[in-house]
Amino acid sequence: MSETTGAGAPPETAATEMTDPASRPRRKLMIHPPNLSPGYRSTLLRAPSKPAVAFKADPDAIELTSPVFGHGEVGPLDADLTRQHEGEPIGERIIVTGRILDASGRPIRNTLVEVWQANAAGRYAHELDRHPAPLDPDFTGAGRCLTDDEGRYGFVTIKPGAYPWRNHPNAWRPAHIHFSVFGTAFTQRLVTQMYFPGDPLFPFDPIMQSVPDPVVRERLVAAFDLDVTEPEWALGYRFDVVLGRTPMED
Amino acid sequence: MLTPSQTVGPFFGHALPYEGGPDLVPEGHPGAITVTGRVLDGAGEPVPDAMLELWTGETGTRGVLRREGEGACGFGRCATAPDGTYRFRTAPPAGPYLALLVFARGLLCAVSTRVYLQDGPDPLLDSLEPGRRATLIAQRDGEVYRFDVRLQGEGETVFLEF
Image (cartoon, rainbow over all chains, first blue to last red; front, side):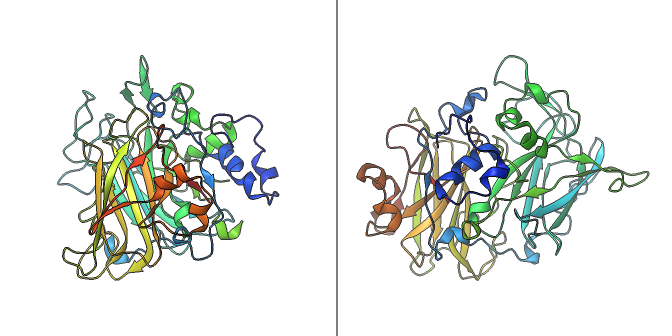
């Protein structure tokens, strides 16, 4: 149960056969990074020191439900980050698409997917980002959409740049897009980051490397997909997000 | 094939917060309560770049992202201020507690907890020793319920795994 010791936790396949509720946090431990990951300095004073209390929610528990999103809440241009301003942003135009699925592979329909990212130069349109790279007046870097009946989402954006941060000397974040996803239960709520294939910064990034299992870590890397790529227009990447089981399914 | 979690990072402020996000009900809504407090780190310092999500368990009659009209929405989102404070206005939940999620730079996984509006017999509360139980119970002052989130150290909030 300790959040600091990943060793000894059962692999994912074995854990799915276990029914002991106490095994559940250990299975999650293998999927998700331990909150205390000293290589990522900001975790030192923010990671809880005590393990989360494993609690068997009763069927009426609030956490087994989730908000329902209406189509009127998302604007038609919200999913196209290249058309939110007067002009087109500078950078490499890309398409990012995929599906939001539950642990059994079922699509999560009409669920909200939010993304945010740096611009092509590696600068966020955020007042506290001090990286001396140019802001792009035609790029905010925030998008949202609802999934369709197959759980599919899609964004048009530009490829974000890598950027430096002050975690350690010469620290650089690999290019990434932040994702925020809702499931059908509040317990499935997930915020994660999507990376681009073949980035040489992966081994040096303590945030990506905080995912202990290298096979699981690879799930954060989008796949280049020629079928998603549109000729004469934009490269395409595919990135699926698979959310955890709800407590009722365990 | 579950997708692992990653931190929300420091730069979500131009993307995730939305107008009216902390107000689950309009001002003057009958019976409205305020849930407010601070997010603190292991040194007792305020966390100025956390984002909290409150869920009452009821979808309600107001949009989640577009807060037009009267009525209530069950979901709220609030980024912390530079002094670590957050504030939600909500209708009281049907049950004794509200669900609260906390995201922040330095949290690789969001942490989940419950804001109990009063103490009383409860399967979760009763499973905790008294010192830890107290971390889940909001302090009431009229219509204002104060609930601090201590991520680490003395008085560390009980976080939940379902």
